[in-house]
Image (tube, rainbow, N blue to C red; front, side, top):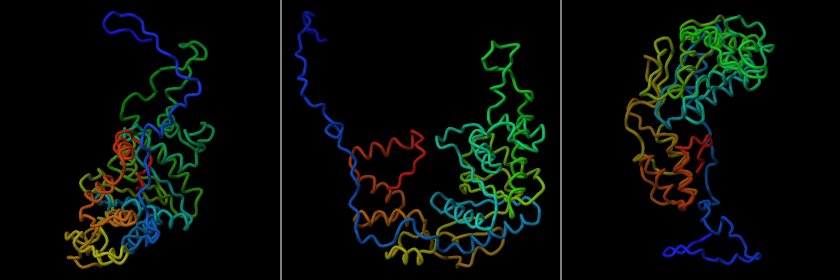
Length: 360
């Protein structure tokens, strides 16, 4: 209803005709359109993994150490866009081909630090449990401490029924049996040890637990991985994690380390068909392994971020001209070429915790 702003009299408004079409959303908002893609787009995406033979060889050396019935911890450190996740994925694919039991844990997709998120996903994969941990009857050969840790990790302690204290059909809010944080931390680590042992028993190779973006994990999961490295279980296991260079892990003293940098600019130029010398970083070798020789490449080799190469190829597909030499500038230029509706979605995605990856 509408009223006059001066006297307050109710105004009669004619109802819209029944045949009046309701405007579609596409009539109100300019919908995102894909940038023009050249038919002759050159290289296919994603690009093949190139220039990482030394790094893959180093990872297989860590697996060989784990074959000696011990836990081999390893860390891949690098800047954002240096190819840590891609290198890890290629190695895990090779491990599966070798008969290893492989699990990959990541931070929660909302970047909210959800407690035990990464640890729960790791245990589910290692022990082949259904989402949520399954039923206690599926936790075969688990010790009382391991069962307590599984209940903690999967939230079972919050769902215990207390028929004496609660009305029938209500969930209890009683405190867990182990109330101190130290006890709960040890229980969580014991649950992970049990899952690693179960993975070793069902495979012919190594139990491989990979943790991507270790620096972004929730604290409870990070503590469990740290405790397992400090007090490892018996058996063949490899725990490998990726992290950013300026955010070290707390168990680095016990782990072999690989410093990952870009790939040589000359190789990148061959992939893209462009001269990338001006965009290359003149800073150190492509990779540095432990305290030994930095790599097979010359110390003054000019390297470039794999992420820059990927973005450059997509920019060229969109018929862009004069690409900038900085990765952040290249991404910003691609975003500017989108219409307003698409840019609004893109700007809102990081803050909304969208688990999807922006492919354009």
